[in-house]
Image (cartoon, rainbow, N blue to C red; front, side, top):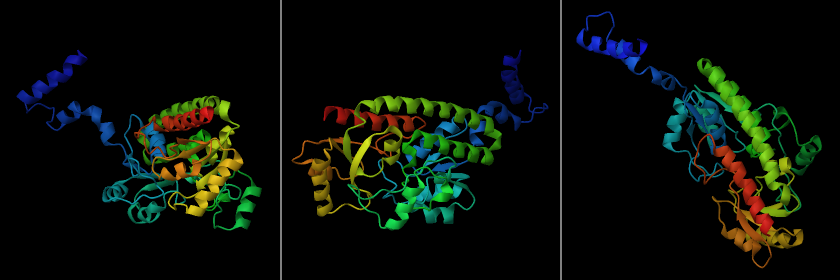
Length: 337
């Protein structure tokens, strides 16, 4: 009887408009299944790894918008008019923070006034690693004394112990940091959209379990090559290195927006030989020719790492594809070197 009631009501409403079923009630009966999606808050995310975590937690409610899409990098990104409109319409905005997406700092102040803005580098429980310098790594110009104090304080710290710009902002490259950010994402979404709290919380629990399983999987992938040193294009992999005990011997540059000069490239070329580095990894967004120059005349091989998911399609599974891709690339290059 219940299954026949819907069609019967529609027919009666069409033939007998004077019945007690108002015409305005018909769309509600026909499209009740879309109400939830229509009521979902407008959520904007900065970069693909963050978008992936937010997407996983919002499944069944809505889909967040992404600012830095395609092969673009947050290090060199210029805000588009469509991005500005999205920020202005947003109810919730997620970003890592000004240390990574510097291009967003002023637009958020001007356009995101009505939104709840979650700066994920403030998530409780994050492991934050200070910028490293010396040895094969370029020095930063923030002051040696400050960095020595940071190192002495220890790698793991609460967000109040770090000022912006003093720690490596590629925080998502440790799945345990991803879990900490996911917890903050969930809390923010529940506060902004309590009607869908149970969905957010259920998705967050499932994501948490998947991140634990991923962590175990990644440990197994890189275990055979943990002791082999390698060089990366820019120093973005501390968190992966710290979590899984791999050995990054140096980087061609620390900040990819600043292309290194001939002297720096020559220095790294020498260090590839001195350190016995077996692989030098490029990144898809930046000039691969530099890597070829660095390995020329050495026994090192080249590979590609994609820490910001430039080549991956955005979505809830992107984070897992990203992390497996980094582990697999390291294993493949280092195993054959």
